[in-house]
Length: 112
Image (cartoon, rainbow, N blue to C red):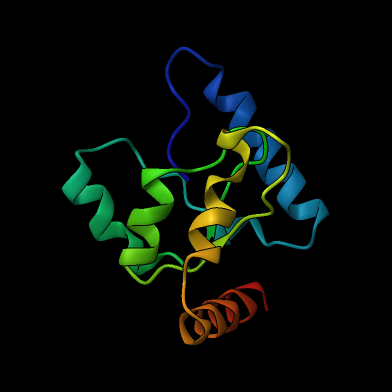
């Protein structure tokens, strides 16, 4: 996860994310808050991640594309009627059958 912006309350946000993760059975040590950096360095970190989690109300756009290109599985639900809500699911739907199957296997593996 990227560090929350300085405008927000980063300590409270981190604590809340870790608390929710633990409530869902995710060990807090599996979550790494990475500091902001330039795009090239950020993309190089994808190889260390197990799963790209898309947001619900305003979905990923270029970041989900970058994750898919880098081999990082993307988990999204495509919630809502607005375009911005459905970009992640549209990206996954654009994959051919073999790519979709491989993507689902990667997500399954990352979740277990």
